[in-house]
Amino acid sequence: MKRFAAWTHPYHHSPAKVNRGVLIVWARVSKRRLAVYLSLFLAFFAPVIVSRKYIWLYAKRKLAPAPASADLIHDPKSSQNPEILLAEANRLAWLFNWPKAEPLYARAEELYREKGDTRNEVYACVGRIRAQSETMSWVDVSKMLGQQLQLPVAKSDQQLRLWCLAAKGYTDLDLNPASAKQAWMEAQLIAHQLGDAQWEARAKENWGSLAFLKAIVAERR
Image 1: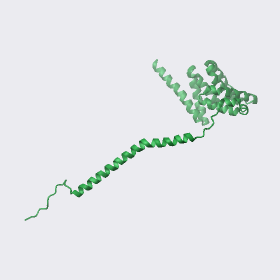
Image 2 (image 1 turned 180 degrees about the horizontal axis):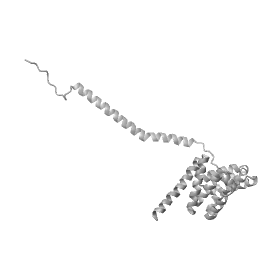
Image 3 (image 1 turned 90 degrees about the vertical axis):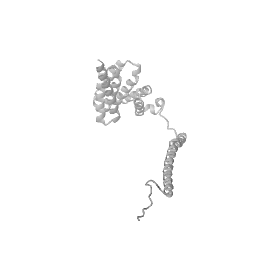
Image 4 (image 1 turned 45 degrees about the vertical axis):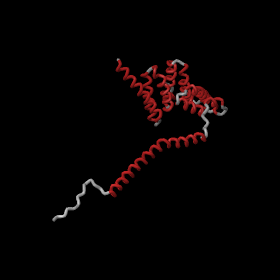
């Protein structure tokens, strides 16, 4: 007579195996919960810890003295140094703070004229004209800047010509878009040749905007 081995259901497990499985599942769940709790902790408390660190650093910082543009005019040394005046005026002009840049350009222009430095006198003059554009006729400003562009020194000095073209381009944006685009395109070319990435990007941005507006106007006609 044949003996048959005890039949076991394929899904039946011994109590030991079941307990081991439960422990494994529980461990996996616990790890997942731990990961979730850790993520929540980092999400909520890490910014607080970091912010407290930076608040402490901010409180302990040493403030660097900000350049006082007005004081440069009245300072006995700076007021006689056109290079310092021009550098600060250019910094302000790049930030479009023309009202504060205007007296610095005017003083630098005067000092360069006294020294007989025509190139830098023209540079400061263009800055002064551009800074005074808010109180003058745009037509007059454009005409004056056009005259500066025709000077021999503005034709031979690429850096100076770039400065003049930028001033003319900004002035003619609303006055004469075609003239502004021409000025900015030439400015971009010169900036590229000089390796001046900042002015090249700004020139490209301005004449690109003009081309875009021109296309919109053409579509509406």
